[in-house]
Each structure stands twice: as C-alpha cells, then as structure tokens.
Image 1 (cartoon, rainbow, N blue to C red):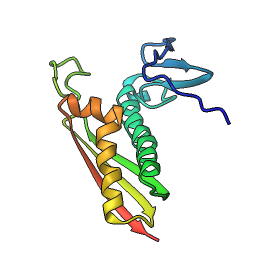
Image 2 (cartoon, rainbow, N blue to C red; image 1 turned 135 degrees about the vertical axis):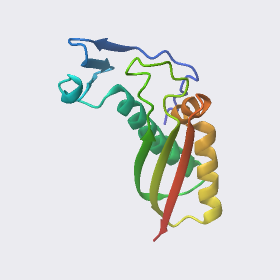
Image 3 (tube, one colour; image 1 turned 120 degrees about the vertical axis):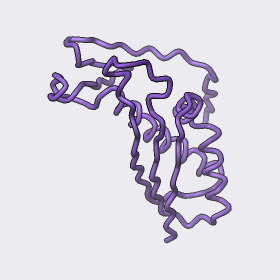
Image 4 (cartoon, rainbow, N blue to C red; image 1 turned 180 degrees about the vertical axis):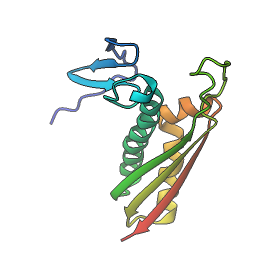
Length: 154
C-alpha cells in the first residue's frame, strides 16, 4: 500500500460566472453550484444567498472536522445532524451603514449518536474548535459562535 502525503498548503481556484446581478454560478474542480438571492430581493431563487452559503459552509466544515477529530480519538459518530441559527445585521447589505460584525451570533445545534464517553466527546469538541478553519475565521471576525451538542448514547 502506497501512502500519499497531502500538502500542508494549497491554492484553491474557484471560478464565478455572474450572469445576473444576483446569481453567481460557481465552478470548483468538476463541481458546479449556484448562489442566488430570493425573488423578493430580485433574484431567481436558484440557490442559497451568499450569507446562507457561508453558514452552510460552517455546517459542512463542522461535519468534516468533527468526524476527523472523532476518528483521531477513536470515537464513532453513528449519526449526526447540524442545524444553524444565525443573526445577520443586514444594514451593511442594505448599504445603510458599514457593519464590522455582520453576524453577531451563530448558534450550531449539533446532534450526534455515539457510544463514546463524555470525556472522549469533550476531546472531539475541543479539537473541533482548534481545527475547523471556517469556525476559526468566523470566531476571529468577532462573531459569537456557540456550539450546543446533544449527545445521544446508543
């Protein structure tokens, strides 16, 4: 078996085609996605908004990094769901005034099913805060990021 060592620093290349004032067609690797505004904001509602996409990226990164941390600590996460509730100060997007912290608070509700002990789960939670790049960016922006874990033991 050949072991491949991943690079520690990479350059990401993402293309955005902007066919309308609200819709952006994203291409990354061989994957395409649409980011858009809802119809009430003159969009075509073909995808999540840019701000919703950022929170969705936080959910996805929390999933990926939590599972990596769990594996590192010998924890099996049998099931996981993550719900986010974010507060967005829209004065900036409405061009009313500059807002330094557009998301004052984001709360993640993380439901997991596992046989792991509380101590093992604490290691996973601690490592998530240490290693999740999206949550690091969000926290460092001044946003209060709260993670509420609901752990169900099988």
